[in-house]
Length: 461
Ligand code: URP
Ligand code: ZN
Ligand code: ZN
Image (cartoon, rainbow, N blue to C red; front, side):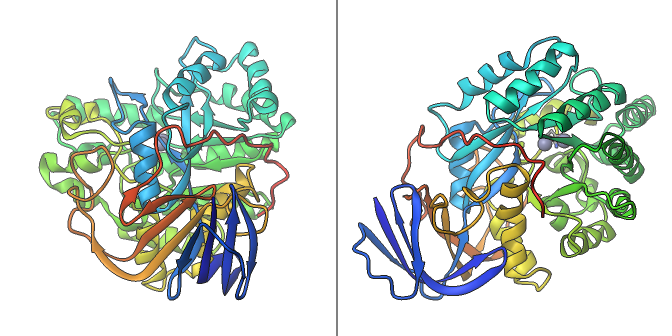
């Protein structure tokens, strides 16, 4: 198929100009003024913005977690992502403690191959590091196109590794050109606060928040950063929420260290006052929890200071019935919330439209930087000749209201019900095919491809 997009305002991480874009097959073939190609489809993008397809490097689809599974699978999750302009996601494979990485990879391939509608890749979560796993890490990088390794400094007994395992993993990953990513919160401190709150009969959702104070994240972020410094391994902190954690990374820049940081839309938009609403607060029970206004301000500033490079979602939805598993005990509420769909619209509305970030910064944090950090640039993350034709045609003026009635995520509530947003994803193109048009998804399960990634350590942002 060929597509000619006429007169759009093309935004890249460092460019902003009006031109036509012509795509043929899966690739962008030409960009210029008044292009004269005969295309199967012509789209008039006058007055619209044209972005590279969004990349969300932090989603959990069909994930076994806290005694249940996240409620979006690869089909429903990538469809919802496409509706919002995210053409590619990176999900997390979870190694079972005591089991191999290859077995975990097989399990996730069964969840995704033939089911995904949008493109995807995997981070491999290392939950149990040993000599055999060290060999598998190398095989993942060299044979499977998986170059990022997720670690957890919390969720003890299920996902957490200790600092000795972390350092050993970093050494192997550094040697073979990958990157270590982390959920950086101090699991032992959190577990003791949870136990204390439960013993005192404090069981409402707000105690989830009170069991994970800022210091638990600041401490772990600093410790992870120190371990990266010691091993000289590239690293990335996922879902950063607070000023204290950001300051740990800021401090590391004084010894010329670079640590990549991701935050998520919820931490830029919401705050902990939502936990005060009795069990309703369970909608926002996630780890780390929502924080304070000063943390939101620090994160927006961190984006503009170049300390925060990526905004993901940590999409991990659960139906209300699943959230009710923790009706009488906050520690049993499955952690996570639905977010994959509206990331671009939220970042545009709250960020660009409110003057907090520029359009080019918007593209950096929603697409380009993730492509660079995770080893798929320039195939993904930019509008350039030869890149995949993943394109979003965005109406910057269109107002709409977020609601469970209109979202496409498989979740029976929205954490943003009634929120007014300015700017809407209208048409989405994935590898040259029209994916979203007139609020409809035109692609079927199986269209999404696994995107193998190269080693990442050569990336400079
Ligand atoms: O609450 C969250 N974030 N759930 C998903 C698992 C994780 O820690 O990212
Ligand atoms: Zn996490
Ligand atoms: Zn997560």
